[in-house]
Image 1 (cartoon, rainbow, N blue to C red):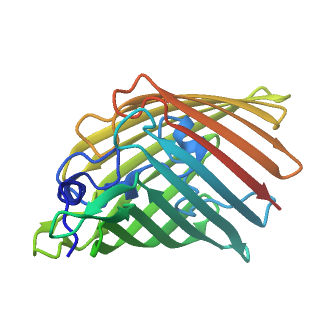
Image 2: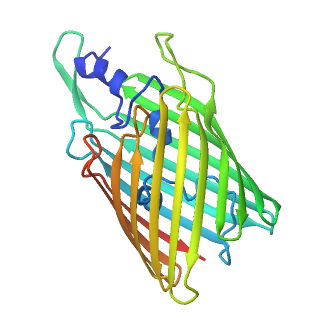
Image 3: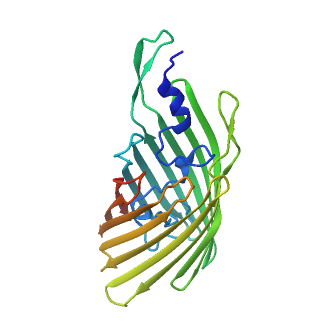
Length: 296
């Protein structure tokens, strides 16, 4: 069996730059699109399909992120999301993500070099939303999570999300439970909890009736195993084409460290591109994400 000190360390730190607290699979709690990350990690709820797509029938997005590139635990993140309507009442989404760490050398039981190994995490999700009333929706997700900690060593789990959302004019409110599931059991028999959290989100949209729109949002997540985080975000959109974003995430001891976020986006004829950069963070400083999408 291949053994190395790096293997032992990876069982503790995995590939994630965000691992804090006593939970496993902490990567499942990080933002998965550039707009969300730019808004201080405040979800646009595309990850839980509780609101319709407006006049669009489908929305497909792909994103790439370089997490903590200045640290020893840097990693690359590839994300995909497809959101679509089913009739007038249902919305579905399909998500996929892979978080790849830095390869390290391995050695045999005799101490001789035996190759390299790249640790990685993976998320596959399927969600369904239902419009109970014109202003009230319910969204549920089923996620398969897998961590390849080291050669011949991996962890896997199933998690569930459930969120209720309501709209009141320009206000949006949502709350629920995310990353709920059974304990993660290692090959040695150790038990770890998922980063289960109770979430509450509020958003407000203000338009001047002409070309300018302002969006403000706030979100609190209480992680049962590692305290809470709070995100605040603002977005200015001109003529439904160009957007500028600013956000702040207070992470405390949660699975998502504190950071300030800057972002921008352009949308035209259904195509969109979003860019986000994180700064003023000891752990995640220098992180950037770029997203591409098309709605039709």
